[in-house]
Length: 174
Image (cartoon, rainbow, N blue to C red; front, side, top):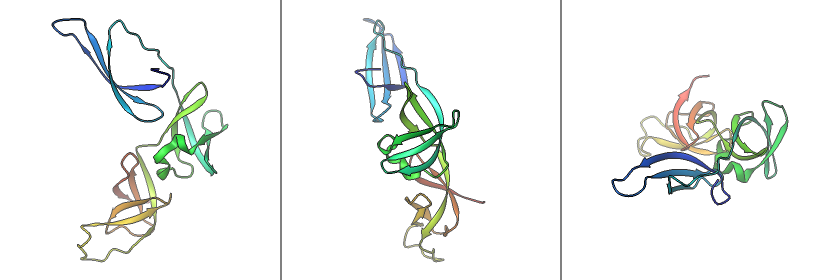
């Protein structure tokens, strides 16, 4: 905890210069805003350790500005504001199991799996031999999000998508 905000340490480097005192350079990410900071601390400085708990949550439904999840351990319903989920809500499917980072029984961040399998619900048909679009077209997946896919993908196909970047990975057989 730094300045009232909770950070996750991404990388640290302990430096012992030839002259002067040793120090630690830390790269850290704000849990709520995903902002990355780089700070330098002397070895005498101490940081407050914040215990974060990872909880498995299953998406149930959306209720206005909240998404309702079921805690997989206690089977309780948990309401999480859409603002906490952020941009990743584009890939939040029904019954998808996610990780919720919590502190003092309040969810701070929702982490989706790195990859999801989604069904294509709408796309223009790919015309054989059409190379004017440089091998790609837009398609809508079952969450309502539009992604770029190759020309051979059709309605009803299942595709693997990287939730961190929103990129198409491969077609999946079901």
